Image (cartoon, rainbow, N blue to C red; front, side, top):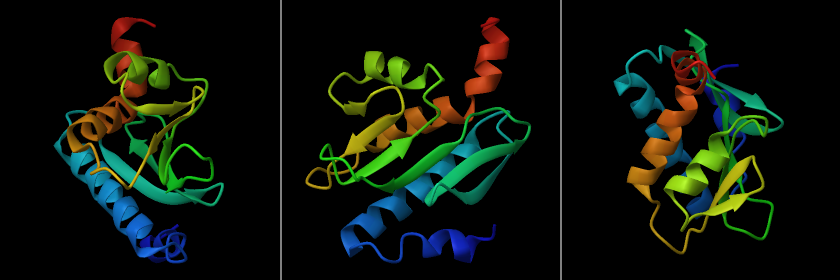
Length: 136
């Protein structure tokens, strides 16, 4: 799916949510372009959410971002609940808010935690390649 249909997903959201999602979107693309071995990241829509997956090589797991529909924050970043990512993130960033094994929730009352998000995104974009390199 092309960029315009994907971005149309967030057009209905309030400006603050839209701005934050676009900032995370940019951070995903920037992190992917700077990371070794990540390759091309494809933007699409899955389950009605902006989704980013590594195409070649398939180094990572899909990242989805959207307005938070829980009461835990304003926006959320989701990954496959079968991955160990959220557990890893909990250990690295205990001050952040997590939803089970599949999401991290962010409040727009605080500035986005860019250094933490950059590491979270990098870990998701390299999830499969890291598992292969450690033999897990």
